[in-house]
Length: 118
Image (cartoon, rainbow, N blue to C red; front, top):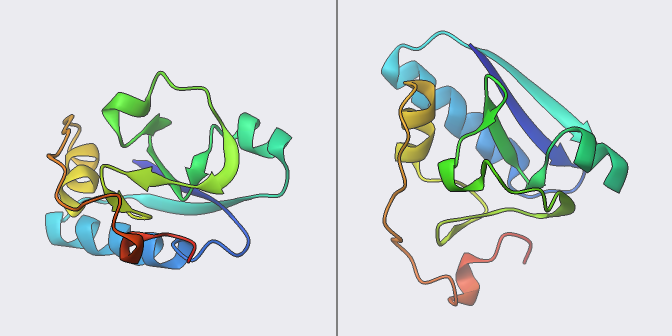
């Protein structure tokens, strides 16, 4: 299984995403090859299908099922279902297990303490 974390330099959630994906994979005993892909331009973001940083892809598919048809690739922060900056563990687990999961919103996205780049 190939897992990619697509990010831009300075993203405060890049390293936490790497740690989180490794933890979930280890908990599930799922073997994977993890790579971090740094984008440096809007063109890179399009080529790597980055829907904001960090974008996590498993075997080429975004871990967020609802985002798979999106094409608004950008050099911006990624927001996952109200958990700004990082996806829920359950979403990562579902993607690693080959299941689709759309979690319920668990935090208020309007809460400024949830900001990814603040």
